[in-house]
Every structure is written in C-alpha cells, then in structure tokens.
Image (cartoon, one colour):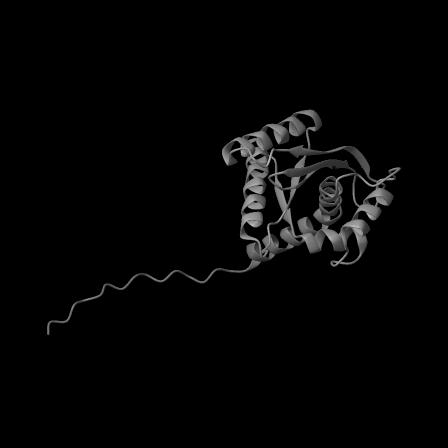
Length: 189
C-alpha cells in the first residue's frame, strides 16, 4: 500500500509518501512541505496548496490519502486555515477516486510512538526510526505527514476488518417489516 500523508496547514502543508504493509518494514518514498506566503490572498494560497498536492499525487501515485482530522483549537483562525487546507487535500484525492482517511493527532501519535500525548520531537524520532532515516524530517510538518501515512498503513487492515464485519452483521440482521401508512382523518370541531 502506498499512502500520501497530509498534515494540513495554510503556511506549511506537510506531505509524505510511505509504502508498505502492516507488520513489515516501511519505505519512505518522499517527504516535503507545500508552502504559501502568509501575506497572500486566501484563494491564492488554497490554489497553491492544490497545485502542490496535485504534483505529489502525479509523481507518487498513492493508493490512498491520509489527512489529519481537524480538531478544536483555541485559535479559530488557525483551525479555519487548517480545515481549508484539509479540504483541498481531500478534494484533490477524491477528484482522482482515491480513498481518503482522516486520523486524529492523538491517534497518529499513539500509532507511531505508543502514546497519544507524544510531543513533536518524539514523533519525529519514531518516524526516523521506523523509516530507517538518518535524521528526522524537517520541519515537523513533514515528519507529521509521514506519521499520518504510517498510522494509516498500520491501522487500515484492522479498520477494513471492522467495516467488513459490520457490513456482514448488517446483511444478516433481518429488517423489520415496513408498515403501511395509515391515512389521517381530520376531525371537525
């Protein structure tokens, strides 16, 4: 499985491609950051992020895209920019028919480090170790994108089994019979 991880942001949108399967050594195929100037118009920044992600999709041809799920923050402006960049990544993937998976920051941290409260340095160190890199990817957004891809590769088999079990259970469960609608009569007053 080849996964493009996207750590969304308006100024720095981390991107990283990891290939492999759960239980086997993983391989990093690319890592980087799509940057936009903070003083540019919002629309121009979103177009720049779209172009950057499209280039990564063209070059690496992933099987799916894993995006960090936007979570509540105290700074509304920051969360809005993150949500907008996230939407661009999901749009680019969906336009190509690629599945999109959303993972929370704590889910990603727990997957790569064993703790959902790991700090950026711990995540960077584990990404370096898991992908057998010489040094942690810089900036942290790039390491976070790789962590998203790793998380998805490791979690996808379990999630797929759960979805298949749920679908099988739903297919076995008999549905209650539909009742015919009873006409309602108005009672004169």
